[in-house]
Image (cartoon, rainbow, N blue to C red; front, side, top):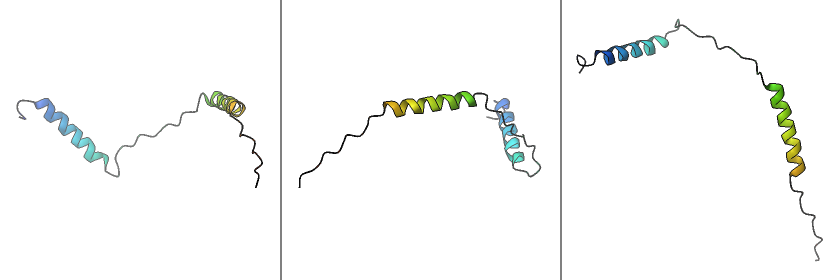
Length: 69
């Protein structure tokens, strides 16, 4: 099988090497870049507008009826 598909063997060997070497303490690490939220002000404005709209259209509780005892 290996002789018929040498590309698969090489791909599997490369993947295995990457997996094994990634667990080492001195393995290369990619620093995660923190991107600033570009739409944060727009999100806040939209959220507050939707909250005000939800407060306005929310059904009010029914008035309580006095009970005769």
